[in-house]
Image (cartoon, rainbow, N blue to C red; front, top):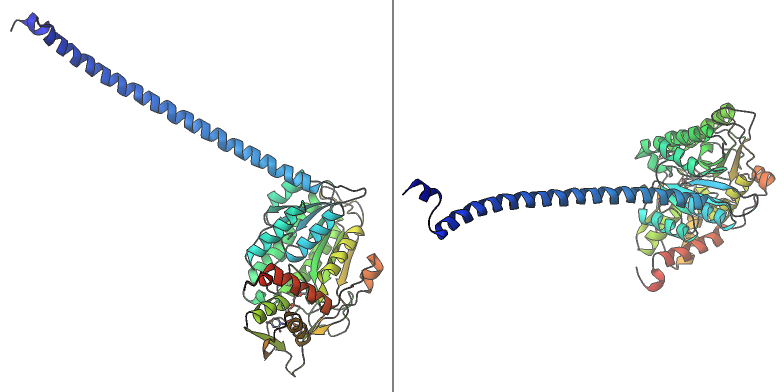
Length: 419
Ligand SMILES: O=C(O)[C@H]1O[C@H](OP(=O)(O)OP(=O)(O)OC[C@H]2O[C@@H](n3ccc(=O)[nH]c3=O)[C@H](O)[C@@H]2O)[C@H](O)[C@@H](O)[C@@H]1O
């Protein structure tokens, strides 16, 4: 075949075929190229869109988070206060937060929602707070950055510090959790409080357990507190000393409250009155500790509403911190108060009251009190708190437990026949 015929075939078909082949070849390369371009463009715009959306969400959620804190901290009454409540999803913290909010104070909660006891109860308290327009930040008192941010958003006038590792006997199981919350966390919080330009007044939860092996009754604030019987008590006592140094060096106004076995609705499931109720209703036995000589243990059980009044009275009379930005400008108040009921009741008597309210007999096992940090009795002298802010407990154990049982049955659905 002549060359030109080979190059330029006479028949259109041949030529056409070859042309089509070349064309098809060209077409498929350009199509692949176009498709690749298209895919790259799609991927790039998707990634761009995602980053915009994510960035936007972060911006909006951060913005919204700050806004919620700002709103929750707003004071809505004359001469009101703006309070950071740590441990706000806890028993005392949730009650105090609601009471402050109801009278028009600004309240922001902080809680790490740890699993020391049923987290769903803490979440339920959080919902209750949310219904009362109190916003809770989920975070730890050891998180200094977070605390600094909270103080930037809201100019807290007071800190009600209730976040802690509670429980006397659990300290033998998990000692470090007490150091983490009750010592390290406390110091982190105080560091932030002393550094801010306008220092807040700090009211915080100590414990009747600091009286330890003290035998002088009733317990007065001036009694010895250098014989703790548990690591829990030792960390609370350490807290009293630590807060004293912050008062002395930096001019922080400090009030420590020694709570005496606080009980009531929305209480702590790890405490005896609560776990006994659960066991009695489930037909399970309860263990009642006794001293060696068969002497019953006794507690100055204090109802939650009385303790809330004590907390608020303390906040109202706390006096101002004097320092600013870490520098002391003058002396500031340092106070410690017992918040008890002044009428101790033995544990078997407390169980009897539960049986009456639950209309179920408990299966009781009496055992000699193991050496687990317990003290035989507590009894508060409340003269100081009465003088300082008119503290006057008004609920006896019988009445208080009745209210607790009513709450328990309703919360756990016993009223609807659910077990
Ligand atoms: O007053 C306080 O400062 C302390 O009060 C309570 O500590 P506690 O008085 O030991 O309260 P529960 O754990 O409810 O015990 C009450 C009584 O019941 C007794 N108990 C406890 C548990 C048990 O299974 N059996 C029993 O007989 C205890 O020995 C004690 O005498 C809280 O748990 C602490 O966080 C708080 O700091």
